[in-house]
Picture 1 (cartoon, helix red, strand yellow):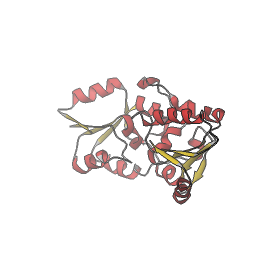
Picture 2 (spheres, rainbow over the protein chains, first blue to last red):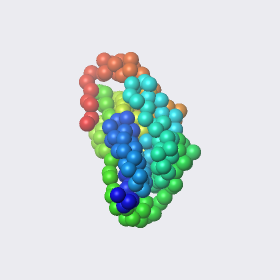
Picture 3 (cartoon, rainbow over the protein chains, first blue to last red):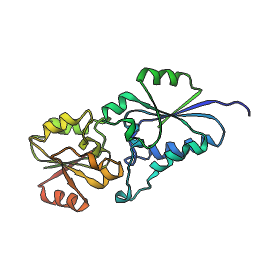
Picture 4 (cartoon, chains in turn cyan, brown):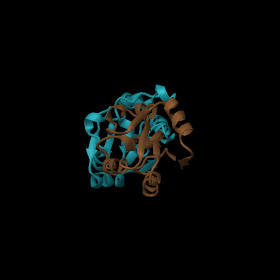
Length: 121
Length: 98
């Protein structure tokens, strides 16, 4: 079992309105337990998952956004955000609750091509 | 008439179609549709243009949950759950766009 594969999780949905963002995070944490090479990608509305200052008390759901900050404790440090997606939403790196690497669409596509497994949420 | 939208306008066409067809009345943005009420997005110009003929409301608990309560476009009315009920009761009819 020494084979380490490159896993990429592609997150394209806004948080809270659907269950995708939370479910992705659950699978990411499971994958981390198997010592794989994990990358997280945030595209389209997925970039909203990382927005600072989420306060979910009013809609009575779990605020899982804090979990993104705990990912480095599971050796998940490769977080990528597409610049074009951030720009279209008026967001900058300062709006995000974790340190990320900002990539262009082309760079994102190249990174995707290097993976062994790509899981889409 | 009240139009209730609950999908992100950057990934779903509901708001677009609503704005294209509705001549007057009110819109209430809830759930993932609240992103359309924020400044700086690619949709801002389109939303501002629609505000000339439609009154646009946004459900604040949903914006707070998404960390964007401080970025509402000027002129959009913030409402709470009580305001949601008042909008439904105060309009002759309503459509929940899915």
